[in-house]
Image (cartoon, rainbow, N blue to C red; front, side):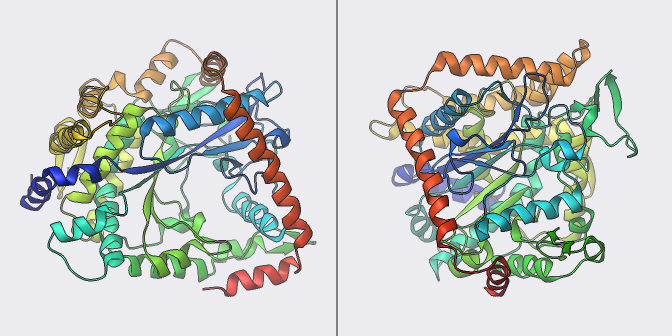
Length: 532
């Protein structure tokens, strides 16, 4: 344990720090495909009963018309986040006709790219832009890659934590600059240690063979008649079969500070790419992509964690970051756990909070090129063979045993689990008081997974596959179990009315937007590209 980390930890053990530690803010974005009773991707339009995918604040679509995305408000109570996600699932399932919510990150049975309908957002300029952006993704990477789902976890400390933290650490200067730099410290440490999360929560060691183009060479094993994978894999979603891009792999986006990050991303947004030039922009009146640059827009950058800031109406994410600094971080490497009704649970969230707080508080030197290579190596090792006995990683150029370095990291995190528990127990009327040792239990569960790989989600899935069960049939059974769970759980009349009203209002808002449009799409896109 470093002296700096130990000193920061010691300062936060003062009782006046405890209220800040109980107000960690979190939001969850969870994706999931709509599928038929035959485990095929739904070809139906986004259900009108769910509202406008363009305007609804909690129920929208990601890449595909069939790929739902549920978004929670920002909460500091973990149970509130899980309950809200559960209500969104419940409301949605009530309004699906003969369809299920696919519980896994890797998709159901596919019938080629054309079986994956691209999301539609109406005739407004922003709606057209969102659709054309997705057309660009299809031409660049294929639709199959875009059918993968996952969970994004948004994390931030409360606003009143930062002046206290700045004073506690003996730093001066602009508060927002301090806050942004600390979040970049967190991001660099996250990248150093994220292989641990991939091992603990990876849930995509296999997938249906229809996901693969038969002509594409691969090193996967045929585990069952219709199931491909790797025997010790944890998260093929995060491998080069999933969210990867050759053009983006050549980018060197810096995470050392906000200015460097913005500069690198801006360059990628403005730099043309020869292969994308060949695709064309507008062929026979059909737009194929927004532009031929390495990134059409900021969101195309497939990073495992992002610095974020809530945008104003019509504002670009990069502009918001540049003008007002980092507000929170978005963790993007989490697979959906198919055995949990909403894909994530309170225990995982508690560990994520402890892990991210550790990344914030511990030493975070700037990343060198050599360390970045080491990070990539470790990530790929754990992605492809994380549960392999005797697995070795690299640390400071030396080979180290996976189990040893994982247990060492968890031991460094342990004092923070104790601290968060102490902080919650010290607060009057805190919701955690009735859940004795919740943070230390969350940590203990992860230690058990490190020492017993069969306890990981990927290990549980592989046990099913090894029994001869096919991935698709197994996940369809789980989808039906999850639906039964939500049927039994029920939905209060008040929440049902609230979500029905939100759906109706979102459709009205889209209609108003489309009726008030006063410029052509070309004019809109020109203004968008010209804005800083």
